[in-house]
Structures are given as structure tokens and as C-alpha cells.
Image (cartoon, rainbow, N blue to C red; front, side, top):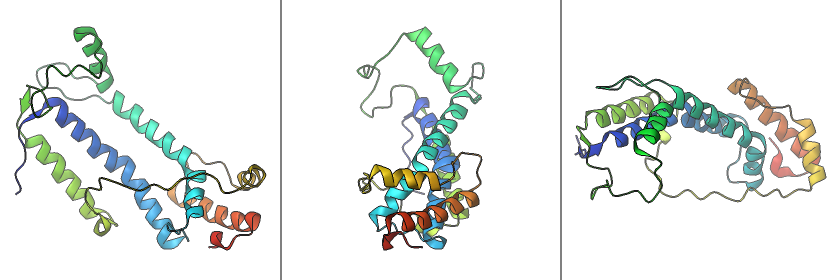
Length: 207
């Protein structure tokens, strides 16, 4: 097994666990959905207008999903060794009361590694890494996993169409919310592709 840095603070391991949960419960679901649109429902990620349509349809819903996850995470109760169980939000509030308000410039307690003086064994880090590896191995798109990507080029999502055309498309697309299943969201995508083809008379929107 590759060497794992054991010089970690309790705060660092909690952040790592949070990112495991972000990926497991939020990020992976949207990634798989977009792969499915590409494989089965005509999405062409090499066409800027398709990417614009993804933004138009799903960006607000993704933000709602992220906020939903944020609320759930901030209020879930964690088991804490040597103290009463508490949620991340409660810990943050207690920390403000106990230590005062801190800003981005409060780095005096950090050592050379940037993780602080309160070190922990690396078992929890190993558990997190193994949990993520198990999830990827069970994921239908695991073979497409590319590891860390330090830079992702995101093209501009500025609309290439007039406001009148966008209003016509908006009227043709049903309202999306988090209660819709992934299958229903895929149906919305297919309907939006057809509507865009008719409204904009552009072959790039053809299914």
C-alpha cells in the first residue's frame, strides 16, 4: 500500500470525510446522469450549444441539490470522541463562542504542513480512501474514472440565442425540481433537444 501521511489534524480528516460524502451522494449521481445522456439520449459534449442547453436545463437544479446536501451535512449529528455528539453547524457555533470569530488570516496555529498541531493517526484517512475506491468499483462508469484532474476547461455558457427564442424554449420545457426521477430528467432533456431544434432551426440540436 502506498504511503499515507499520518500527520493530519482532526479537522483535515473531517474535511476528507465530507468530500467522500459530496462525491458519493451528490457529484457521482450528476456525473453518471450526464454520461447516460451522452450514451443514450443524444448529448454531444463537443457541441457548445448542447453544453449551453445542459446549463439552461439543469444548473439551477444542481445548485438546489448542492444546497440540499449542504443543509443535510451541516445538521447531521457526528459521534465525537471525548465530548457530546454534535452537528458540524453546532461545532462551528460552539467554536465561535469558545475561540471568537476567526478570519482567513488566522494561521498562527498551523505548522509547516498546514494542518495544525493536533495530529491524528491515518486510519480514518485509509477508511475514507477505501470507501471511495469501493464505491468507484461498484459504479457503472468506474472505468471512465481519470483520477485527479487539476484543471478542467469549462467553456462559456453564454446564450447564442435571442431572449425571445429563449423564452419560447422555456415555455416548451416543463419545470424541473428535485422530486423528478433521473429518468424523468432524461425525458426533459430529450424534449428540450427536440424543442430547441424546432425553435432555433439548428441541426446541432438534433437528437
